[in-house]
Length: 196
Image (cartoon, rainbow, N blue to C red; front, side, top):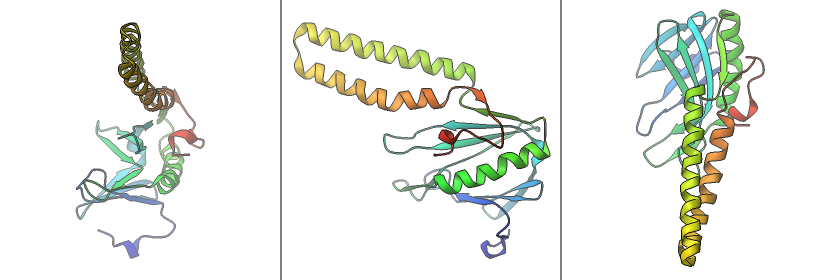
């Protein structure tokens, strides 16, 4: 495994702990390969083997935004990295600038190595459709609750329903809007899915 001082300044790189209480994973672009280092082992993935790169927005809580890139490999495997570094079960750092810089270097390198690679943003159409249906159902249920509370004259219940509805809109609208399925050019990824 290469030590940090051995990493060339010319090699785009990114380091993060993908889950609470997990060890850091390092990603480096070296020539036409993506080098993944975890737990002392190094795996070199030829960029030509990457068949799809998908950018998504996946918030983890009210306060934590998370941007992710999923790479599908010709072998059938998947690899992903995201914009949050978990330091512990409680603490996490947002690394949107470093994430965006690495992904902006990675996408054109994939396109050059594999001109047939697909670059997509958002969820799959099926998942996005299910997300829309679920979101509408939730808000219809909240609206029904508020209307029922209004008819009964329950001011506290109305306030609770309106608060839950507002918080839900605040959380769900960006998830639905940003995860709309679409293709993009690797030289011009959607800024809103890069943390911008």
